[in-house]
Length: 289
Image (cartoon, rainbow, N blue to C red; front, side, top):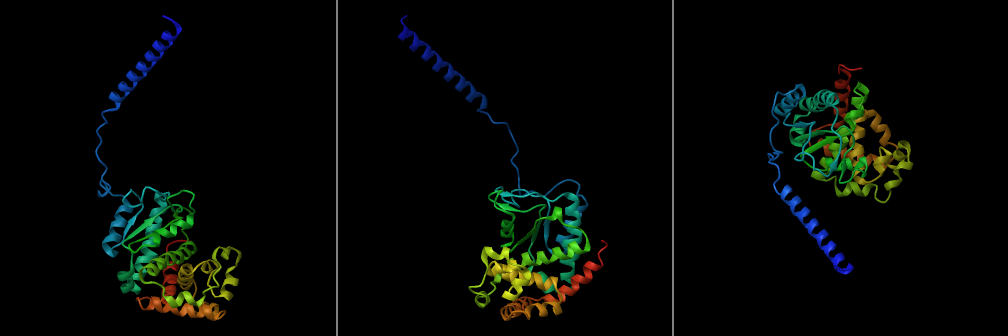
């Protein structure tokens, strides 16, 4: 056998060996192991823990389903997040969702709660990133631009003190304001009050005091009209009516937007100034430091 024939023979032998190996591997993997399909709509089974019992009670009492454990039915697989630590989720459900949000609204402004509540509430330990883990925590606002679901991140870092919860409830109302904005619209006239003066990304270089003289409650409110609206709601939950009136006296545009937002909520069954006072009283009576 000359060298050329020998080379061809060895090449053919190598190809045949590779083909045999591939066929064998295909036969080996041709049968997938039997697995029971995952039913993402199934109700959680087993003995309920104390938090499960509390979320069931809240659902039966207020019609809001609280989620602290997630599957793809609740949050899309392309969303990046970290569920809250169990003990933090338990504290949050008891002292924020029940005692500071749902219960006071039910007692003081039941029509507003009945008409405007989300039917789902998601407790997230960290920020929420949509489609990319590098999208930034601000992307979590997209979770609240829908009618049926409200969600709050940063629960693992929340200080479960009276001061920490009182501040957090202001942000919860801010996020809920985005829902109402999407649902009803803040109005053509609202966007024209500060038209052409929004900071956009330059808001970070302003202080809140500067923003108030420019017509916004917070510097972040100067970012865009939707944040202007939400930070106005947030401010009325954070500050007393007397303090709000002092702030809006700094700028006529801010005073105009304040009256628009206050009436927007009043028409839907809630007086934000009264809610501020209710929350001060409720949080002060929480069994926390």
